[in-house]
Length: 413
Image 1: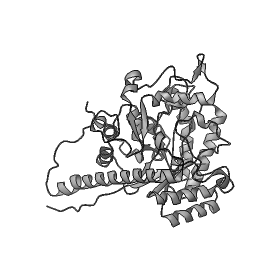
Image 2: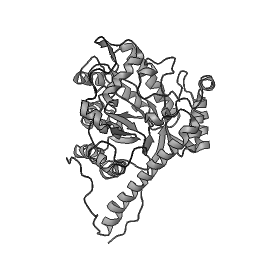
Image 3: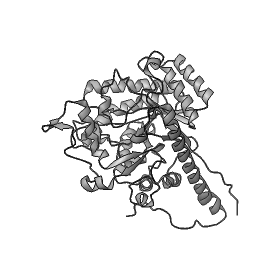
Image 4: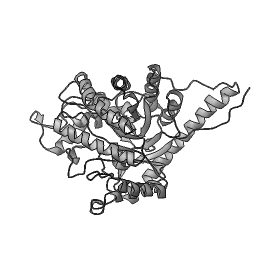
């Protein structure tokens, strides 16, 4: 009988820079845009991150969506008003070397299938700038949405995807990049009754979109940056999602993770169900969508009436909530990934995305201990899962020793 050594494989734990939008004040960063990246790299090292997910977004002077209409604020930490050239990249990479914090990918979260042709072109052009910046920074991937043309059905959006998004993936392929899709359904993007406003919102849709990509030779560019908070929002659980992908021969699709949770509000769920609040939200005036941008933020009651984002480590340990898919079972999340997915864990990013509203302090001194605690929680959970996997699936089998018990099972109700 051959002995296998205990060799757990840990993921790189990081943070998305939208956690602190204005770490560098505007009066300092606008005239010197790369200062914001340098200072975020230093802050990431301070809070214990291995890697950084670098947020890019339209500058506030150029954005088409007012901040008051957003549920989760974005950050243009990477300022792309001007071309990100080799000189800028050298400066940022010097900060990477000095801090020891790597840049896992560049993220631009926007609707790439927007129904207005001119708005869509603007977003596509910006995404190409993101691609070019990622290449200069040596990143293997970017992270973003697919989106949806709100004027068309999801079936019709498959044509839009093939016509508009596949060419974007061809640009990614030409640059040697992977496009990691975040799967949030983005219910608050519209004031109508649509809940699924990002067509890449669930495993079956990922597979359908990947098949389209494969037909055009860009299947390897389409991957998923999985976020369990959105599974909870739709009544799903991580283990069953991963099992579904494996059963369908698509366990390779997930290529990175956001660690952001969701805590279901049982009272809100009792009142509205998983479709969320459908009427009386405050985003309409006299039966028509309000023209006040601040009112449009109420469209997010489709989501916030039934749940609230969790920063990993901030929600109570609640086994019943885990078993009923009303909160993320973080340990099983990381264990299931190792048991069911096809990932190079030592290089895959595990990114803390901080969107727990009450704890989103926009003051460095206040936010620092919050992020430190969440990053440390995330790291320890991943280390525990890695230890369990190595012991149970490598060491014990090599010596003919059975694993004890049953464990959480997919598809079980």
